Length: 169
Image (cartoon, rainbow, N blue to C red):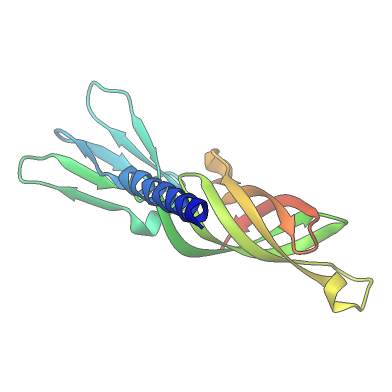
């Protein structure tokens, strides 16, 4: 009993420490002086005279806040860790090529956690063969041309591996 209580306490402390560490990742970036801000794709590019451009990836563009103070300093708050609903459609392969519908429900920078459904096109009439639920980890591709595309790998409910690409709506 005592050893079980200690192990549960250690897990709780580690979980809290991990939560505080993730919460610390959402600190704002402050740029002193004038700046030009552009947003190509999912990236904010901050340009200042005499300095190289500074790109900042924004996993959820709707949560980004940009503000200025009376001295001309720019503060950019990009939420790098969070929970939200971002639906997507894609193609994946498990036992055969499947059409997928999923949603990114949690994210850390470019990484996401996606529950979804994989649909078999044609063939069987058995519902368990037509629709397969899965849980996957996704990674948003770092190229401006495909800024709304992610690759993912996960496991189906039947414990088989699934992997593919998704495009968010």
